[in-house]
Length: 352
Image (cartoon, rainbow, N blue to C red; front, side):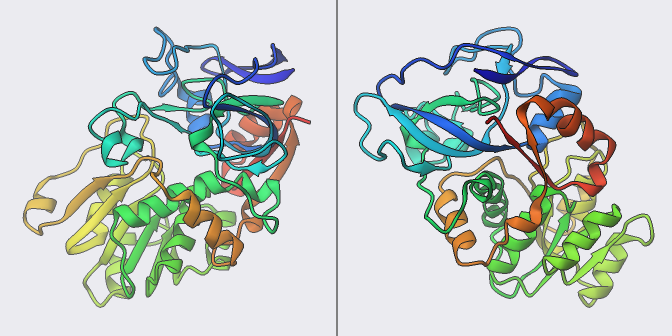
């Protein structure tokens, strides 16, 4: 079968590889319909290895580079391993990307996204930029008939946005600032509105992404190259700042800006993946009793993401800006996102 394999920085090759074997106990084989290019995939392409185990096998999966990328996907169950009872052959699914041990301190508290041996499909084990992929049955969520497979491939990033909102304890009536109107920023914006936020401000400089934020319901879209974003948010909140700011970029300066955006006693949530260290003046936290929390992936938000997509409170179709074939993933996927990142949101890849 064909697959997109990560060998190193700027070295992803579409090549013929063996089809995954018959699934083992507790596993299923999925025929991939669509898989989205995630910001994490792009980070690995441009600056990796970040998550990918390049020097030694991963402690949970036993895998290391070269690895097949891809974790935002939907497809059809084609084989079932021993002991699997939660799905049947022929059912469409959207899998959670997290592989976890189930025995560590955090797993026992159902916070599996911070498992001591956490692995992600397509980063620490072969993923879904391929015709077929094997995953644990515990990762599977069934797609209802009203959600087609291309939209189903968006459930994983939508779950990331919902998790960020929950980590921020966003309550009905709260004000929220979203730093970045890329794929995660835009789903987080919609999740904030679904949670009942009274005002949601998007901070973004790319013209096309600013337009997307407007269309998806941002109260105001603030370009930090045109105005002081912190001062503008304070002006729009009666001098207070927002209750919650969510950083969805992973920029050197945006983490500190997220802290500045929140009111006294407010909370900044870091969702972005950072390639370089950032600086924060901790007096901003001490003097105003602000909080910073991290937010990685999700634990249990897939059901909510599916429900919000199904009833229309989160729109998936506007996020898709490209559909390409697997053979095109480097030129029309990764390189396109690098060259024209500001005009793209989500590019989906079909292996068929």
